[in-house]
Image (cartoon, rainbow, N blue to C red; front, side, top):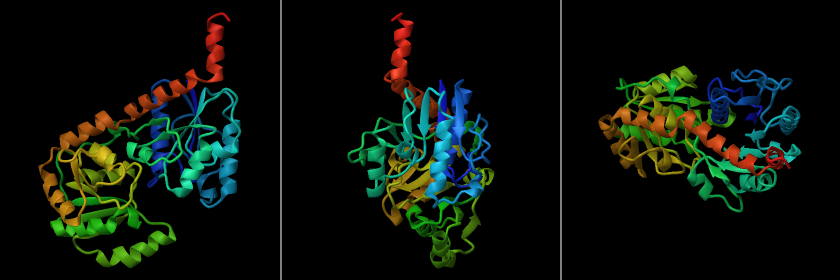
Length: 352
């Protein structure tokens, strides 16, 4: 297949640090190419994903995340380069809404956000033009008036993550400076458990800076250390050294990428029972799920008894890039079978 993929314009693909959607797009595009498919990627011009890319798009540093005009230009230019593809996989919000259909070319869109009131309205409008993919069964279960064509969990290139058969440090937290991510709860849990905590977190937006200075910074000390925003290598090093990833999310997160990254490093995850966490973590095997601070603290204390090899095996079997690519190829094939172009090709092959 020849597959056109659209990434949002805000962050390079792959992202230099924080950027969940861009990381998924990179892994999928590279995995599809490795599987023998032709891929053309529409991403910011400073992207480095090793597949052919649409020329003439803006650098991510030139695009403001609050500029709808820039995203529309990105989408229009991207679709102009998609005339000769078999299928379009769009990861933007505006693409399925403002860009005309390419005749005979089916479209898929992965829903990276929750089904809140605003996004649900957007997703309902999207489904007129594109087949929708949810990223967890929990996310799909919250759809209201939106038809979900498939549920496909994210994957990562597990081969690129160093497995750590033993830990050398305390617990860690990875995410961004936002109350929904549960950093405040992670600090309280680690202190209850008597286990040091190291924090890697994105902190760029004004709200994130305010949250850090007002809530998190006063709690730092010898047992709670903020390391800054970590790049990929440092992130995986921290995960590999840690006895567990603390992920006490405070909202129904559609999919927690950091959890499968931890599993790939061999690191158990201690999480609240929200969103996709029960789909990712096998309670008592690759981590623990709990609903209270005390329960999370007791779970954290028990992580040293879990087999880190089970965590790695779960990542390899359930959350690898190869599995994600196979799932998307299957979905693309189903869409192509029902497309007008496929029908004409089948008729020609039959001699009609």
